[in-house]
Length: 361
Ligand SMILES: *Cc1c(COP(=O)(O)O)cnc(C)c1O
Figure 1 (cartoon, protein in one colour):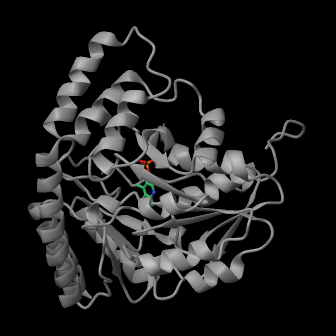
Figure 2 (spheres, rainbow, N blue to C red; figure 1 turned 90 degrees about the vertical axis):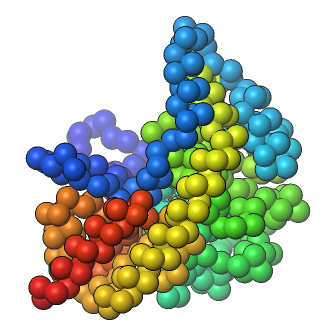
Figure 3 (cartoon, rainbow, N blue to C red; figure 1 turned 60 degrees about the horizontal axis):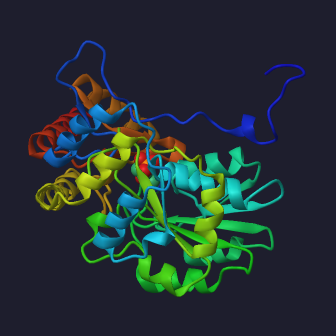
């Protein structure tokens, strides 16, 4: 830290975000199951659009994202005027904190909630508040108990990362009903596509003036490297967020590739089908090995060991076998490993390696 030139309050409290490990030195056959990426990669349509977009890189991109918003509106039956696009949903989360929370304000989320809520709250100078969970599931009662006259934002990922658990619509509605007058509920739907028939909270947004939904192209669409996410909210909120959004926050390739990916139903269906099949298999295999593993509603599972030391030792063994999963100590779950549902060979390799590890003890 410099003696005289110092950042705003809160900035130095931010722990640098550690992404999922991406490689193992000296191993070219490593399998990455640490960032909830789609094991099948992006769809063909997205890859083609990315190639095409190269020819127009001299042009500035659209600043109002009208074409992508119209396509999103079509696919999800939403009003495009109430959609905002960002560089990942991370940027929408940052806009919300930047626009609605400042020093003295509180940003509320749950104990094992997504790390970006804390980071964005601190970056805005606000105070992050974590409410306890029950059995690795968001507790609406605990969130309500933690609400104060300073609460400005309440973030809930549904399904949640890294637990994979989910709250029913009735619980989300109960939470929305309990919001203090000055607060916004943000429903993070990064994994909503994986839940059959779930709208990510869109209907609740429509019925309220204080609920926002965020979504992403990073998970089901297989475009984490592209950085495109979006938010849907009441008109007054979207108008505010557009004021803090840079006019060219998304590049032409981002806009065009995301739009192309939206229509690639074959890619979505294959990804969803395989994820559901291998997730069921993985959860059962982990339970058969004696590990704790909750039902997951997303594209990853959380494997719970007896102790932090055991989780660490297993992680080391997996790395030695060329398998990269995620330690989630920073999420308050040091005895657990989060494993992205990979393709069948990857899932079999992980289970085989964990069985080896358990057998050696
Ligand atoms: C992956 C993830 C996101 C998406 O982040 P992007 O910035 O859109 O890549 C948002 N919320 C949660 C809970 C996630 O796990």
